Length: 625
Ligand code: ADP
Image (cartoon, rainbow, N blue to C red; front, side):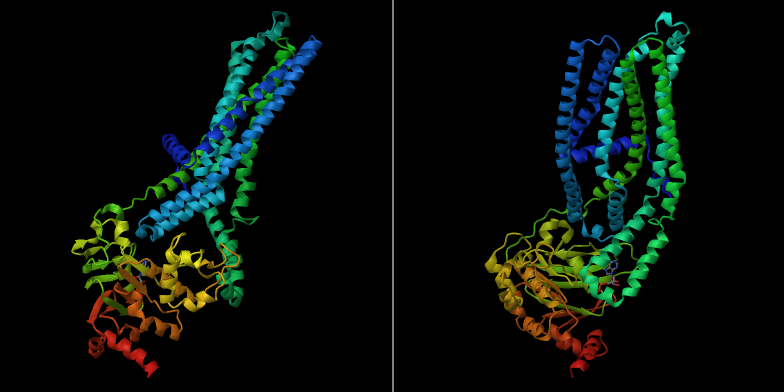
């Protein structure tokens, strides 16, 4: 089991992290903090009213037994118990209702961060690992921001418990044993008093420190716990995901044995595994020891209070009050120390959350605006552009030079892995080049406002995704949409017939995520909707990565025949493996091994014998001959 010893955090740092967590949670949802604190204060202070009244009642019963006073005491005990309970329940309900919203607010904060983060960071495996660890810490051990709510309430509760307990137990130490008690007056000796007061804080502290040691073992093992949880979660996902259902049925033996085997190897959910061993062994022993130490203290308190009552310092009612009050101080002190340890354990996890939330957005530095008039004469130039993916040693693109103007039709061709998609990703500024520059109208694209620059491109990526909304909303990429425009784009993309066959037309949901009656589209249908989405955006540049890969030959022919009408006067850049479909393009750029090896029209390229284009063309042509 790996130990995260390096993750230890100082008290100062823990306080700083907890303070920031408090402010973050407060900003996220102020009422959850306010209702929690009010409920906590109520819970911490009201028990003392009951303790005080019970002590008075028992004292009266054991003493004068004045019926009038007894009646009043009983009445007040009942009224206070009922109203404290009632108000407590109302506060509980209020706080519970607020707490439900904090989960949503917490998730929403991560979604917002993910959506606003530079793509290069989203795509970075380190970022993905970070987010996955944060989620696993939260789902597995409950570690993270939301735990801070309970911790802050716990700290407040215990401070007030201690204060209330001290207030009610002061007279235990100040009320002397009468002289007539003879040798029992020793109980008033300052040494005795100091010893009892010291025990009141030291013994619970020892108990809490032992318990903290036990909890720290589990906190340090969270990495292993997370791994088991992740694997378990993934296998559950596999078993329930209908998109994997066909492959799982065909390769079922592998899936079930692999799942059992992998989980067994982690051993964490096993009754003989590492975690179970710890629970039975070290952690269990430490918890037992901590419990025993705290019981030992209770024994001492009972002994001292009863002896003082027997010596005549106070009556039977005093025993109830003082035992309850001293125990409250000791329990409060013990829980406070435990909480401190827990806060230090949790601060490690919260720190990781803040590291994630603090990831800077470097792409948002530019401020120039792109002029969005349709008649704007855009010109894009790649100048000596080279690029390596983060964490990779090899160039995905090397020394690429290319220029194209608005209105042109450009095709990118080449073998798999030759750099075509990477070229598109750099053009759309999902990544920035490591060397060289990309210019829009002669100005480095980094100088433009990031969102403004990206808005001039509409892209259909090879691995595009449709969302669980209606067809109309998918096409518009927005909840509200212009139905006439959406239909027009779907018609241009070849989806008209299918759209007419759907009873709810544009209002038909895609997939079952949001509607039971949603329809599952085929790969080809999805590609047509994705193409319509790109057309709806009305951007001056339209980029299509393998736009017809999932279409049947008739639909494909239809798209290419109508291509010029579909893309109108936009600049169209598209990647295709079907070279016959590139013939209508003004220019074809041939990629090989991250560089552009040939450029020109189809007739020119096919005539360059020994060139990559000619070899790709000939390889395809033989199937159609
Ligand atoms: P193409 O679109 O021509 O098939 P790509 O541009 O997708 O090629 O890939 C070019 C090279 O970059 C390939 O060697 C590929 O393995 C690598 N590559 C693509 N995406 C990533 C990524 N996210 N991280 C690391 N390497 C990548």
